[in-house]
Image (cartoon, rainbow over all chains, first blue to last red; front, side, top):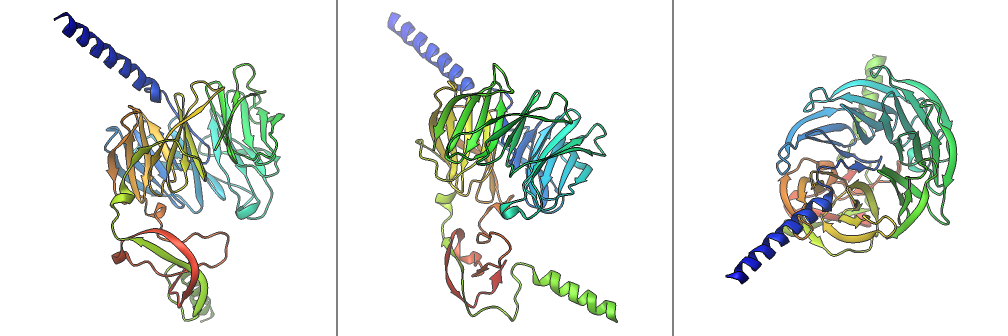
Length: 251
Length: 181
C-alpha cells in the first residue's frame, strides 16, 4: 500500500514538474516579438498576414482553429507588417500604410504616407507618436538613396515626415524605450538615441569582423541580432544605448 | 481616334506584362525553368519535430519567452533556447515544407506549409505537433512560379496541376515555353 502511495506521489510530482516545464518552454502568455521584416503578425485574437498586394485576417480566438475573416487590398510591393496598439503599420516599397483595428476582423486604412524615395525596401516600427522606417535603395530594391525616415503620427490619419537621416544600406530595425537599433548589413548595427523622438542621435555602432547584420529584435534585456551566419546576442540591462556582447550562435 | 490608338497601346503593354500570357514572340529554345512534381502531397504536408540541424538559408525570426525561432527557407523552423543568453543552444527543428513566415501566440506557432496556414502546438517540447490547418489561403507562398530576380524575363514550362504539387523548379534549357514572368 505504502509503495502505491509513493508511486502516486511520484506520478503527481512528475506531472507538476512537467507542467512547470511546459509553461516555461514558450513563456506561457508572454507576448512575443518578430523581426521587422515579418509578413505574419498577431494582434489581439487575430493573425494578420500580408502578401505582395493584400492583407488577410484570421480569427485565432480558438488557437487551433484559425477562421479566415477578410482580405483587404493595400497596394503593390507590400513587404512588412508591424502591430502597435490597435494599429497595423505596413511597409511597401513606396509607402507606409497605417490600418485601424477598431474592427479587428476588417482592418481599415487610415493613412498612407508616400515616400519621396521610391523603390526601396522598408520595414517600419512605431511607438506612441512616432514611426521609423528604413529605406534601402541598393541591390534589388532600385535606385535612389538609403535613409532612416521619421514620421510624426500624432495625427494618425496624417503622418508628417519629420527627419531623414542618410544611411549606407539599411535592413531591419527595432526599438526599445529610448533606443533605436538599425541594421546596416556589413556596416553593423547603428544605435540611435531617440529620447527626442523625432530627432534620433547616432551613438555607438555594433560590428563584428566579416559579419553582416540583417534584422534585430530588442526583447526584454536582450538584443537579438540576425547576422549572415547565425545570431549575436547583446545585453541591454546596463545601458540600452551601449549594448554589450553576450554570445554568438553559429548556424 | 488617336486616343483609341494610345488606349489600345496602353492595354497591350499592360496585358502583355501578365504572367501566363501567350504571345507570338516566344523563343523556341531558351534557358528557363521546368517544374518538378510530386504526385502525392502527403509527405510534403507532414509537420514533424526533428533534432537540431545546421542552418543553411536562415529566414524570418521571432522570439517569445526564452525561445528564438528562425525560418529555414522553404523547409521549416529552427528553435533556439537562450534562457542563458551567454550560452544559447539549438533545441530542435520543425519541418514544414515551403515554410517562409511565422508568428507565435499562446504556445502555438502559426506558419505556412505549402499554401496552407498551419497551427503547431509547441507547449510540450516532447510532443510538438500540428493541431490545425486552413488550406490554400496563401497561394503566393506555394511554388506556382519559378524564382525571379530583378526585372529580367524568366521563361518556364506552364505548370500542369494534374501532375501533382510542384516541389521545386529546375533551371534548364526549355523548348517553346508558353509561360513567362
